[in-house]
Image 1 (cartoon, one colour):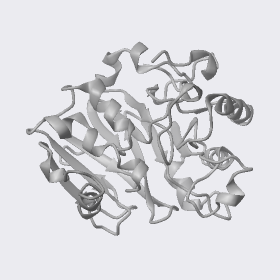
Image 2 (cartoon, one colour; image 1 turned 90 degrees about the horizontal axis):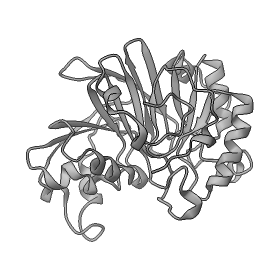
Image 3 (cartoon, rainbow, N blue to C red; image 1 turned 60 degrees about the vertical axis):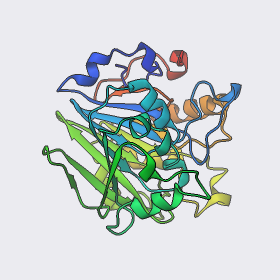
Image 4 (tube, rainbow, N blue to C red; image 1 turned 180 degrees about the horizontal axis):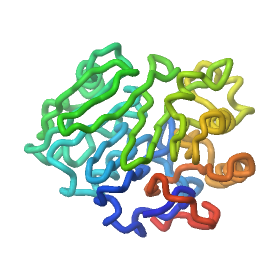
Length: 310
């Protein structure tokens, strides 16, 4: 299991840490925003759209169903629980497109996928997903898939409490049609996922500061550079500088930037990461397949010297 700040891939990460009762861990299966990308300029950071695997001890959550969800399913094969809790930040295409290609949905009739969506004023994701995955937009409906999908609606800002007693805190984020931020706490450690978000004016937002306060790791939407942001105002995304301001104001120990711009190449992201670490040393740009053990001190080697081998 890599400490935050490391870029070692899942191929080099021991699996035993994932099943330790005392571990809060995070694996990035997709970190790109808007649309998947591929090619020689996207090998280090990856090209899949958002999908995160969070483990609170042996308890699994998957956050978002972007194109990275396919890689998640292929990696775990039959190793996932029979009931999977899939939390959506929101239902834009880059966060939903991987759902019909998730192996447990496609192959296993005994599997239940519970979806949770908090940005629709209490309405669940079923109607939206049924509309998206049906002709003429998609050749088959989700009802044709072997697995059972059970959809749950809630209002962002309400906690999610599960049958096993697990609890996940939520917050409504500033994004077109809204988005949900999540806070996971386990074994005295705290992880906050704050994407997709556009920073407000003034900043940082007081409610958001309290939500992320004292986090061991905050994952933040840093899609734009400061130069790009003015012409993209209102699109629902932020910059690493605003993420650093929030982190420092709320005593957040470390920050990972995701929802990476599809035009930002490996070379550009390495330059951005160096600028960011000059301001906040325990900050890094997330890499696809990177595994983080939340709350473990960052290792000394720079991220770029530990690029993935996957």
